Amino acid sequence: MKNKYLKDPRTLYHTQGYKEAEQDTPALEAEMTYKPDHGEKSYVGHGKLEGRNALITGGDSGIGRAAAIAFAREGANVAIQYFPAEEADAKEVKELIEAEGRKALIIPADLREEGTGANLVEKTIEAFEYLDILVLNSAQQIVSESLEELSMKQVRDTMNVNIISMFETVKAAEKYLEAGATIVTTSSMQAFEPSGQLLDYATSNGAVLTFTKGLADYFTSKGIRANTVVPGPIWTPLQLDDGNHDIENFGQETPLGRSGQPAELGALYVYLASNDSSYVSGQVFGITGGTRTI
Image 1 (cartoon, rainbow, N blue to C red):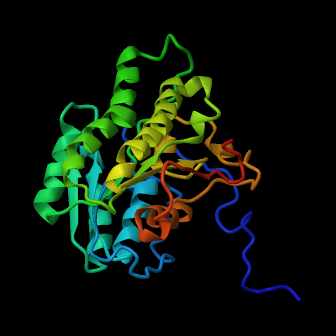
Image 2 (cartoon, rainbow, N blue to C red; image 1 turned 30 degrees about the horizontal axis):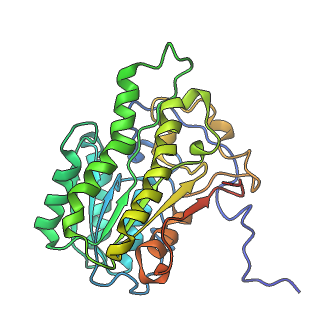
């Protein structure tokens, strides 16, 4: 007899590719035809983050939104950074956080600009008084067909958003982080399997891995943990940001044969932010549809 409670991971979510129009940077979730699942209807909290205060960069959509929803349902107050043009998405997340009876702070900020990371930290402290969860998740990903097409401005912008802003945010947050605080970064499978069309993005994500392992070593003596999540092909607005050119086959090459949904990552971010992972630091967690990260 088949167990009716089992769910086949190959068919649990959307199994086909997508037919979506490319969007200019930044792509908006509100304009997507096929809406990602962030756990709005499925995630159930159990008080794992009661009394905690989180700052999530890129928290308006995709993986960051899934983490924000999960954190709020686990009892945390949540501040999210978003690029100014993404305000419609950010307001939706604010409503979802406040619906759980938690404080929400949405901060428009361009991570390409120096000083932005430090400003995010100070605004979060002003609103919540304490800060003990950092989720460094914001990213820029733009396809370039050739090195000639890849401008150095784009390279610098990508590095500023994807890795330099992480340095700045952690440096500013250090004086507020107490023993028991946690840092979670988001990298990418591009760090392991770099694409020639995403050289700047792939390079920055390799740096995120090294940065996070170094943070774990630095903060161990202070009782603060740091870990990184490596998503595979997850269906988010980032995939439409100035052109992923193979959307119709997106995620089909993974062993599980489909793309992932942000909802499939929310619980991992909760685990890494909570005391459930008290003996875990400096580790890499792949959510890749079966593709190996080592």
